[in-house]
Image 1 (cartoon, helix red, strand yellow):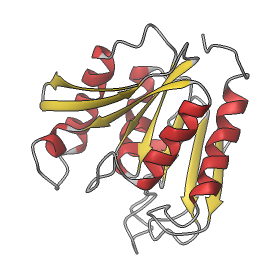
Image 2: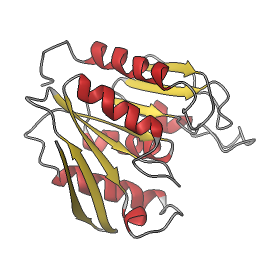
Image 3: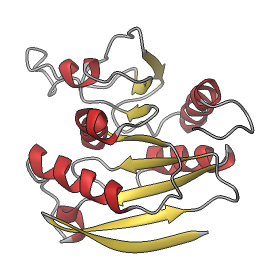
Image 4: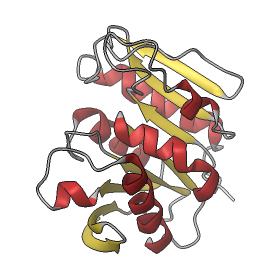
Amino acid sequence: MLTTFVVETPHGTARVHLHDAEAPRAALVLGHGAGGGVAAPDLVATKDVALEEGFAVALIEQPYRVAGRRSPAPAQQLDTAWRAVIEQLDLDELELITGGRSSGARVACRTAADVGPAGVICLAFPVHPPGRPEKSRLDELDAVTVPVLVVQGARDPFGMPPPGPRRDVVQIRGDHGLKSDLPALHAAVADWLATLVSPGAPVR
């Protein structure tokens, strides 16, 4: 069942698309990329597999997108709005997994210490601007202390993050859009969720 509603944040109105599950095991909250929205193919595929695995899923539209702007707000505003939305979500005290695509993945990583998720899913994490490897953002990934899944296109011009002690990196065919092999993305997310949460068991 889909419920759409708005949430007020310090930086404007955000919109939540909440896909509920019957007796959900946990909740997955996902954010969109800088210039895109919650209908991005990789976000939809991740939402679908999470629902199949018994998770409630909330897709969050940042206030700048709700206001009709394509240019993203500054990082601090994105993070503040994200925290405000999660604080106001009524998820029946379910344990959270957070994540997003591209810019949304960076927001989920930067706020993980405050939000306290059980894990973070990063779709097409932008390691650095195209052609600028010296402008690395790996510190945002490295700062996350819970399990992380990164699904990255093998030809992503934004770079390829290395795996780490708590970080699984799955390369799939394609580029930053992650559209070329959605079945591989689906399988990567399903496999990771299965390792994070035992089948049929709630996350607590």
